[in-house]
Length: 281
Image (cartoon, rainbow, N blue to C red; front, side, top):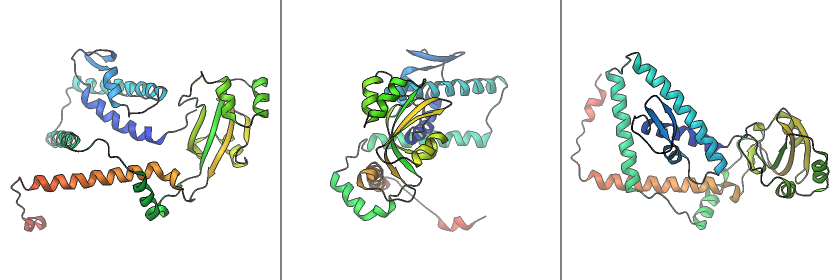
């Protein structure tokens, strides 16, 4: 079982590009975690590609997936070279364009702030103006989740008498840890449709604060406590929209800085245009 985490999905697309560009070489590296013939990838190279602040168990799973992807790509790449395949002129120009884009991103990274601080007042002001834009795009639930391999009678009775599933988890399962495959604890807001169908049916009939379970699936026995249910189209409150607002404001500030830098640099270059040529076939 795997409950998806959206920001990791986006990060995965980005980090694969990073690794593809920096590990395809035959130089000896420290802490090599995988090798295909003379090509190597190190733990440090995988570590650099992981989003900052990722929980340890998430980092380990993500690095494992990236390593497997790197091995797969390296096998295909080396096989293509063995068969004598090469890029044509148009494909080589695409490589040049990609190299240019990497240099541009590196330049902007050096010149622009790496961390745009957003004040609480800015967040509140933005929300006041744009609150109609912050709605749930699907049914979301905020739940506490426990997954057991066996239908333990003692734990079942303890949960039956408990008001908080999290208290039971802290008392009995704190050392187990939560993984993407077997999530335990407060899962935050998750799309309802990403849960197994048996859990979805239970959640839909569950009152806020109540605990459902044991719910048997192919993965084991589940207990779920519903903390909040937000239906598709419902408006988010300020706290629920906060992370998205911060991201929007950071992007706005970055865009403003990029535009200011662009205007500053344009004055140093001799730029000519001929708009009449745009209509030529």
